[in-house]
Amino acid sequence: MVDKRSLVAKLNLSDTTASEEKKKEYRIEAGKAGEDLTQSYLDKWGTIYFRIEQETKKLPVWVESIGSKRPDFIAFTSTPSEIIVIDSKLHNTNKESFLLESDEIIKYEKLIIKLNEIGFIPYHMFIFPIGGMAPNKFFCLTLDDFSNGEETLIDEKKFRQVKKGCVFHV
Image 1 (cartoon, helix red, strand yellow):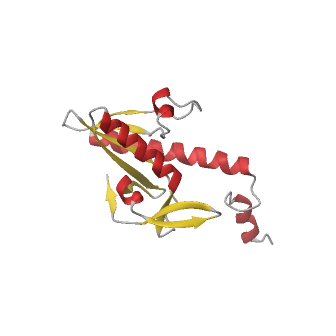
Image 2 (cartoon, helix red, strand yellow):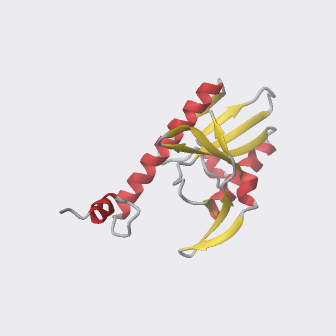
Image 3 (tube, helix red, strand yellow):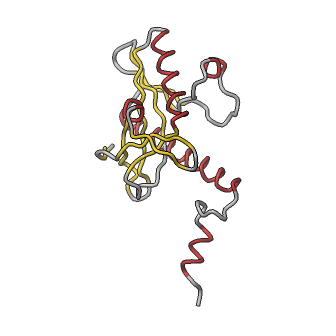
């Protein structure tokens, strides 16, 4: 008889025996899936937005020059000077909170500062699609949530941790 636990363990890419390359491939595919779900939400809402290409490893000059991160989407509101920068994160929903590396948060903060300097009223939100059996449900957090989140250390890296809030429905 086949041992189910060992069989499932062979599929689990988060297992320490999985190669770093396989883990990276999984994260890239999960990221694309999260972006696709987020795009479907924006389309259903009739949002005016553009999706920023993530495939190329070269950052746009303006992003690189300020030491920022490239968002997944930039959305426009009915107020001409307002924009909402959106990052989609596909996340394991079994955990009680969301984590982002502190260095990543600083890069997002630099982006918001730059957009503010050039005359926009920017907001930054993170959409965490649930996916699976709940593709039209997601968690939503802001950059402020993470900037003010509880600091935690994991494998000698600093993270900000934010407890899950309410679930939104498309």
